[in-house]
Length: 245
Ligand SMILES: Nc1ncnc2c1ncn2[C@@H]1O[C@H](COP(=O)(O)OP(=O)(O)O)[C@@H](O)[C@H]1O
Ligand SMILES: [Mg+2]
Image 1 (spheres, rainbow, N blue to C red):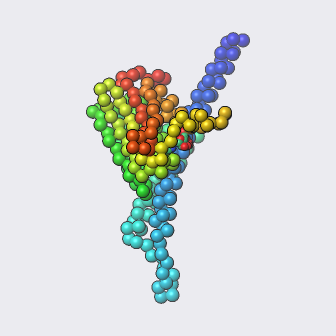
Image 2: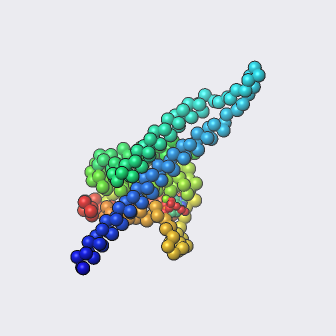
């Protein structure tokens, strides 16, 4: 009986792990991608609203500024690419394949891409300050750090009304720190836990970021920035062994 109980528990644990993995991937992957996609669509709409109608030789003609036209083309291409990527990721997720991990040499490049695509959004300026001598060679560390940055950036986009977002990755002595700062409205992380109704999943994104930080032997702090806004800081000690590897 005890053996069967042990097996049952094991099966339940595996199922719970799998459920958490899919939940996290939907939240951190798919939902983030969809946020980005809907913001691109919003930018296209804004540009299209600048169209004016004129009647030329009894015909109704839509007039659009040259620059706006090329921006719409550019944004539509991006929209198309991002939709295909998301669709591919959902396909992989539904087939039980873990979406591609950020490759070890690629954290810097992945952060650069995140910065560029955020900076492309209308009314948002995003910059990256990457000061690490080498590369984060552990793919699990790189992936968790990237996902934390992605969630923090998307929170800034969705909740903060900021127009500036700064991402930094720094190496100080034996610590590696990732920071995402915005100049938005800010919030009190304590309020979330205090006001949360029992059983209600509040702050899933913040919880997952903290969980990821823990997985790579690090800590996560969410604070009000010195000059307002929000600062999400993940600090890890280099060389810390990663659990589950
Ligand atoms: N950068 C931010 N600026 C302002 N408010 C934020 C920011 N990040 C998080 N929040 C607040 O914390 C809440 C919880 O964030 P999160 O756990 O990521 O959940 P979600 O993004 O799904 O709402 C958000 O709903 C928002 O109210
Ligand atoms: Mg969130």
